[in-house]
Length: 346
Ligand SMILES: Nc1ncnc2c1ncn2[C@@H]1O[C@H](COP(=O)(O)OP(=O)(O)OP(=O)(O)O)[C@@H](O)[C@H]1O
Picture 1 (cartoon, rainbow, N blue to C red):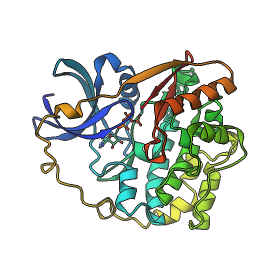
Picture 2: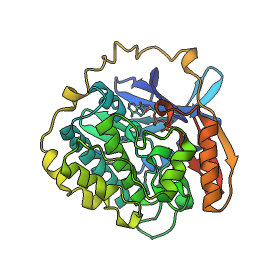
Picture 3: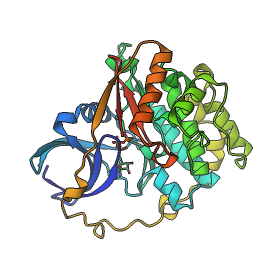
Picture 4: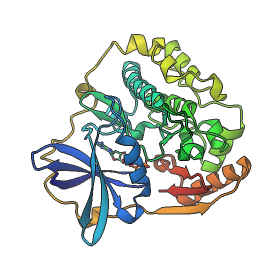
């Protein structure tokens, strides 16, 4: 397929996302990294290409392109024109009202139900990894995702032992470096509900990632439930945010929770609530990205250790090293590969 890269619409820890258009005029998003650093994006493609759900961003294909003298690996996917859930929250004055939280949460839970039924743990659920298209919220960014079992053969996947994600959204068992299964996505979902309700991260009063990770891993505390939420919303949070992963509800159970069943019938159109984005033509889609937009993020590798305590220490040290930590910039994603290397990116 012939296509043209447009302007940058987002930058994550690992990749740059641009708008793109095909010769026939179809608009899509393209996530790009240098080919030599594309291991994680290729792994993302391997997972995304197997998925098909209205609640997961759609896969289109992949390509290699030359940008100046650099060969890029490009993952092409459905374009979500209203940006991320964080963007939608900002455009609504910094907080979403409860009917909208219920509406989006219902779609995310259906996405998680689908993913978990295919044996996939997303491992990095947060507002910035939920994109909003014409038909609502979709789970995106499968850079940390793993298939923990082959539903047909019941086999362990190579990635099963890996640990990843964003510290503020990490479940206690993940912060301790023990395991990251389906319940870890449910914990992160609870954190994402708090993020929609407050416009802030869970655990907002912690000023450093190491204190954050120790608190999540080793205290008996939960993130604070926003006092202004209804009892149903708080009960929903209570089913997600249980420190013991075995006590958390599954996505299949959560779909039927009264918070989603009743309030999600108050459906507002995404157009009404996500503001009115600039038209694609206004955004200069037809021009190539310029030099200043081509700084693709570097990845770094750290060795780590075997015991949970040592792993936790390494995770928190890496977090501190990687970012000048403040809550606006705290979207650090940490990946810990099976051979016990932590790949941490800013
Ligand atoms: N399909 C899409 N449609 C519209 N915008 C998108 C799409 N995918 C990604 N974006 C934008 O690009 C940003 C970065 O994308 P993404 O999160 O996939 O990159 P990443 O490098 O894997 O991020 P991180 O690892 O930091 O979470 C998103 O926050 C969003 O603003």
